[in-house]
Amino acid sequence: MSDPTLILRVRNLTARIATRKEEIHAVRGISFDIAAGEAVGFVGESGCGKSVTARAIMRLAPEGTSIALGGSVDFMGQDLLQLDEKAMRDLRGRRIAMVFQDPMTSLNPVMTIGSQIDDIVRRHTELRGRAIRQRTVELLNLVGIPNPERRADNHPHQFSGGMRQRVLIAIAISCDPDLLIADEPTTALDVTVQAQILRLLMRLREERGMSLMLITHDFGVVAGMVERVNVMYRGEIVESGSVERVFAEPAHEYTRALLHAVPRLDTAGRVL
Amino acid sequence: MRLAKKRPTDAPLLQVRDLSVVFPAQRGNPPLAAVKGVSFDIAPGQTLGLVGQSGSGKTTTGRAILQLQKVHQGSVELLGEDLTKMSSSNLRRMRRHMQFVLQNPYSSLHPRMTIAQTLTEPLRVHRSVPPSQMRERVAELLELVNMDPAVMHRYPNAFSGGQRQRIVIARALAVNPDFVVCDEPVSALDVRTQAQIVTLLRSLQDKLGLSYLFIAHDLAIVREVAHKVAVMFGGRIVEMGNASQVYDTPAHPYTQMLLNAVPIPDPIIQRKRLRLTPPEFRFSADEDHDGPCSHGENHVRTGTAPWHQIADGHGISCRYWPPTS
Image (tube, rainbow over all chains, first blue to last red; front, side, top):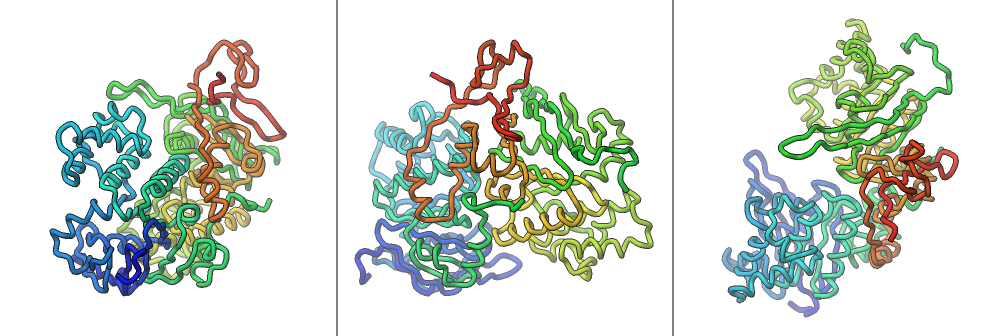
């Protein structure tokens, strides 16, 4: 890679998703960069291709589909689209980790929280024996789970939605990834819990210097969290720039329409 | 056709008093008081926004008002008649005055019924239009929600989420109701579609004089539609007032926390807000205790509701305040 400060350099990425019924050209040749330690937001309406972009980087097909990728995804000097499946498996979770929207379906309901994190730590680190659980407790503590030693023995249903999302973040950062992809990480949560999770992501990012790719439909969520934002529409990036510039002077008509439609608490409401 | 009974013109359309809902004990869990002593009025042509986090009792309140959920205590008067004491045949007669619009436009339309069939069903049930005029009425309803009447013979799968929600709204309006409960009517939709549906609901209100109970977790959306706002927490209304009172001068600590947590689509403001250390609120348990409340009144002795007026039309509950140390 020419620029050493970049950790991700995506060029002309295309993704076709095939279901049994049809094939969808979900991502139509997009290019973007993410620098080391940088947070980049992807916003757009449902079906715009933002989630498929995230999955394409991880080379994961949405449930029940197959995915055909084109272009290049240069991650720290390696084109991920050229890696064999084994090399890709080693990289997933370890160097690039992902947090999804629904924390319930991402956890195994019959295993304790602690043993699920233990498994990940065992798979991805050299730690063995008691050191594994120590690391698990440390991770739970890091994401703000109170009484982590005791709570590690709980099952997912004993955790609230916000706590489960914290657990998924703990799992995602367990191997100190270089890039964390968060796909609508707070969409299923109440607004007060959302604020806690956003603060947690911001803190972890700063403490660990990891890059963040934040995917959301919510302009309020993206506003405080990222330096740059890419607006997606119908599988393409229609606008890209610093978050301040895009919010203050949206250049593309679609971005203007989206921003205009966002209701705001800090401006007048209903005219009575 | 309004009810024959003469009502004073300034009377509220809906009057809810001390409404409580208790879910019975289940599988070893004790009974759960989901709604506790909720009271409010909705005037004709006005919207009450009901906000709060999931599990606060908003949806149960809406269902209890429509008598879709058993009411434990309290009264619900629509057009001057108490729905909680009504026989089922009288209640059926009242149903044409009250309708609802739910969150998911994908599951609330029958996939094998055409739009025309969906819209004629309520007309037939309430015998509000003679069969010869059904088609005309269906076309009129579709025009009311800004859809082309030519689509009436299509099935729901031909429509987007926003179009389906328009059809759901048209169905609710088919019988000329006075009052519509909208429970998260736009939360499943994209932001541009949300704005269109909100605009539609407001213009229908102006045109038809409808009253809405607008239930949503999205405080910014509620600000766009509501004249009055009630904030729910733990089954109670903890604050109520007109929209500017609640949004601009929130007085209950829960309302303040909720408003502070809403992300603002402005990078500079929002970044600053995220950097602030969040206030740690612990809300006290909801118990009657013999002693002064957060406002210095002993409700056990006086027998009054735990409610305090702080300005004209603006009140707060003295329950669920952080414990004073």
